[in-house]
Length: 587
Image 1: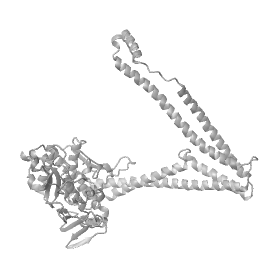
Image 2 (image 1 turned 90 degrees about the vertical axis):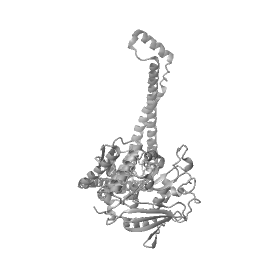
Image 3 (image 1 turned 30 degrees about the vertical axis):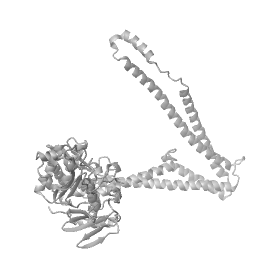
Image 4 (image 1 turned 30 degrees about the horizontal axis):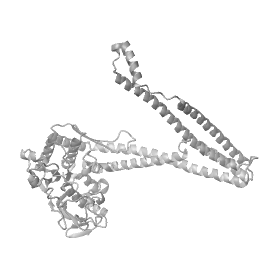
């Protein structure tokens, strides 16, 4: 099967002033090792092979492939160790085209690419990323492909992801949402429907927030029901017409009637709320006046216990200590019930007082408008009432219209979402043979490494229509859930994407695993042996692995590893010979 995209092959990593020794990459397995220095050979190793620069070497590769500088550990290196003007360079081959990427910390947003002896300077990082995308994604439209960095995050997972899950590629502490575009692309499944559904979910989520705020504004934060708003609008329109007619004829009697009705309603509401408070305060008073339960002493419990034990004999199975503990729990439970009830009543009283204060202020304002004879004091007062009511009507109508419009839009989006889910289902059904074939590849790898075929892989749309997850990707292997087995699962999944007959033609042929093998020795050995077995069949890939040499020393000696580790080693670092040739503290 011909490849649908160009291969990305690493050739050489180096710097302009050789602040680290260059690393040359080859096809197949590439090992970057942490090793014990000569003077540590006869000492306890402890963590002698950690902190020597294996992960930093991977960071430099990622830096040259346009990772975000601010999120990289490279940004934390002191300037006297890595000067701002030092150019980090990576020779690569895309398809058949060799090129060199140069990037420095001082101009990290303006990288340089040298190709065909010509230098291309980029004004920003996005242009440089787009340039590489155009070279890598061969005959694939932008709408059907992920971004270059999105794809690379799957091929070179952040070590801080801890390899917990096949979908998690970034630092687990940052809670970056899962993005399945690269996964679907490699599986040969169109990502357009997935993107559409993901966009719909986000739009629906944002719209629900707007509707919730509309409702909150309309109902005065839940004090009135949304179902009564239409009736109140009709009533308010009627009042305005009444006042309008009265003002037109310079008569205020009808306007007074409208205001009078409002005052009566407010008085009725205030009286009702005040009665509720009196009842609640009475209940609270009863609770507070209740005598506090005296704690029954252990001595008293013991006397009662001995009396019943003497009369009932062997029918009492509990010992005295258990009885005392039970007595204490009963007393604590009684006290907590009364305390909780008192808190609930106090909260209700505070809520009602807030409502009463608002209604009382409104009542006072309306009373001021009337004189003792029960008419408007002057035409100015009548106009004030008119403008207030008109403003309230207009504001409420705008809010209500927006609320109804957003509700209609919400229903339309729900229907569109349901339609898109069905279309995505059809897409998965049309590609079921690809998914089944990928599962077969996973099963083969799992059997080689774990000795059994107890694994599964599936893509499904969510059954719950309210779900905000566009697509469920489920992979299970035997005993997964533990830290080491989850790492093995990620390894199997990543390697399956690299070598599967269907996914490999859309894969750039590069996979980097930085410290993934925190697993048992047998799993580590079998994983390395599987890669070597595949290498004998197909050499057209690069697998770059950072590893502490002491994890496989015993297996090397026993010749359990099918290849020479020394032959696959492209770089090694020790406490005395680190990647950046010196020790330093990150800023």
